[in-house]
Length: 352
Image: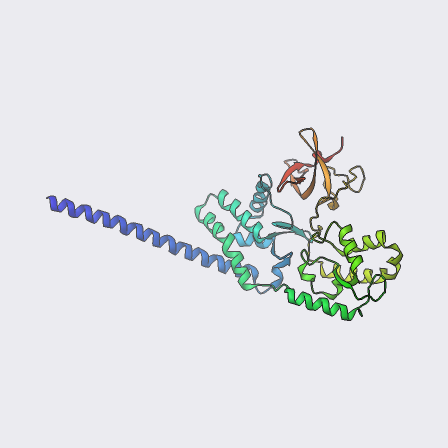
């Protein structure tokens, strides 16, 4: 009898191990099936249209509709995920995680991951949550395999700058003078606008002192800049040369804006200026109306927090609707020298 019980125990232990192995194998097979489904779904969403993916600021971007299809979710649920993250301690960052391009919401890969995390944590169906949890990583990997845009290398940028010197006859385009020391300036800086780094419309030959003075006026070589900044600098600091270069800058501005039509309608976020916004100006005043002037994004302003005026800048604007269908506008406010933003009601920005 003793031998029988010993054999029964051994058999039971082996069966338990076998069941564990089979369960593990079943789980692996299930994950393989889900990953295959994700890849097929991603390819279906992409189709043969490379325009499905935008490239801006060294990031890939997908529009709201395609993100919804990617996660196989609904519009209300996707909106809810965004709103829930917006109310968290770490909201999504505009032009990093999400952006609004030509009146459509777009998400970057980092935004997809944050949205995927939120969805997978709130979905009640285990299979659906598992799909989303896998898709937030698998889909971007698949997209990069299918669509890998080539941004210009430093070698190509150097070559384009050499070409600009030749095409512009080694003459300062601001003063019209020849000079042995000329700099090739990127009207739209190459860090924020890498897709324009080798575009000849974006490269202008100017004297080195003008180049250094412009970047000093713009608060440093590492700060983002656009052709509008350069035009403002010439008008303000070199007005005697503006008439000479006005036509050329207008021509380039039109060409570059056409090429940038798929970029965000918001300017790249800039460091806070030492000057604050005139919040009493009708152009810049923040109100609780449905329409808010987008020029306030990235600009220095003040918010009333706990009855104190706190300096910072606005990273993003979000509009939701209450039960009465009236718009509720919130603004993501980044305190000066803080890394993250906090969401505040629009009323916090009204001067009392």
